[in-house]
Length: 611
Image (tube, rainbow, N blue to C red; front, side):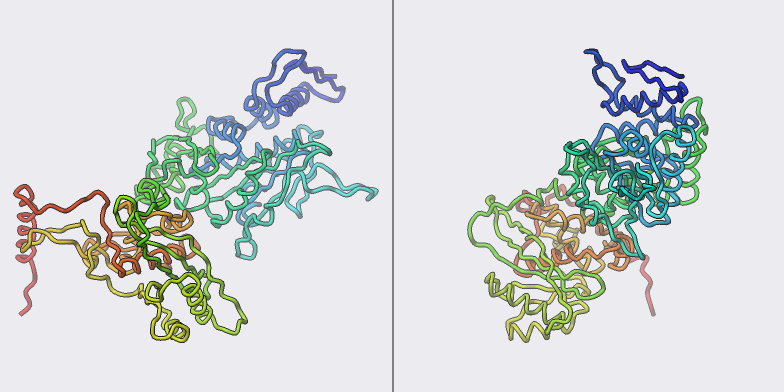
């Protein structure tokens, strides 16, 4: 018989070894919250220490390196923990160890939902190589630990099948895997939003947990389930993956309070608080692998090796996505800097603030990004522009609405859009000349609008047209040999009109002229990348490139861009607030003219002359 006394508790069992007793004591300490009183004396080492002790006894062959300890601590001490990181950083293992420890300690009052992309990914990663692997090893050493594996359901439950078939086996407790992709289509976590913790009869002692693996490659709606779960005090969420884009679900959940564009990469493993539910975020940086620690060089074969990052950089380049996604485990500078806008940019320039108007002389417009078929949404928005309390022109973006397109309706899709715009015009008293829609690739929509509006129709905006000769903004100048300097024109600054439309939104935001911007619209704008092309012009990535990368179309931001274009046609001017009247070029500015003349002279001397 083994008897062990510890933490003011005693375990004695004729069938137990000393190791069994020690594990029992750690489980009891975890059940009691890590710190508790026995006989009026405060005992216990804290939850983190007891979880680590349980792990050391249950899986003694597995090293507790500093990344594992950091990850376990983050999960235990926080309601939401997001773990970014390089490949082979032990994120999946840490989640599996925590999920199983909780199940062994709370088999009937704990429900853990384990999600990944598809069944194959679950089997190859967190379910097969993580949870089942650790469960089998634990039960081999300690057969008395609870749990029965239901392979067909990818679950571990506390009850076996009743041989007399007198009692039903409950599967609303334990560990249950949830694939988020079925038949190649994302089905998400929405069907689990109403799941509740498995409380004991008459008590509120249950806890619901969610462990998300490969979260970076999930659909953006993956995070929606958390809105319901977070209302419960008895909920814990953990998610992990390799960051792919600052707009992917993992980076959205991990976005620092100051925004990704304010994030400073220390070159080492970092932690911070997220703006999303105040999540605790950990970034396991491959340049800082425990295999580089003194005395442990490449000791941990299952972690990123010392030269892992250098090898990736040599193969793919210093700015490659492969290096940052697989080697460093954080968003790269290019992920942030080559965005049309960022959430941080919007916040710094008050784009999410409410507009306070100077008077009642406001211009109301309605703008539509028509779509039907192909999975795109048909979006419409009512917006307003005018002077704010300081006399500056500002644009107040309205809340976008999805225009429903019904199948088997007596009107076709274009007829339904036209009827909707007519109804908006009449019910909200918006004149047709203040209504704008994208006409690119929608030639027959104009005929449908003419049927319901007559000769006074909404204004088409051809997003596939050439750039305009309007100023980029009314305070951006370039040198001019004849007049000193002049306003820079859009056709000189942008390569395509769709780029002009999107960047006009950015210019308005940076000019402190945007208000009431919906965060969902800003998130779509943040998703689109741009590059500098021939002639030093700016060009946004194509719609097809963007949809291939983020798996959706930016319909809401397209709609906003159409609204900004409409406002500019009605007289809205983009100009940095506080810029004031631009002074004439003085003597101190003559160097600009000299440089321009020198450039023109050199360019002319090297120009080919055709005979």
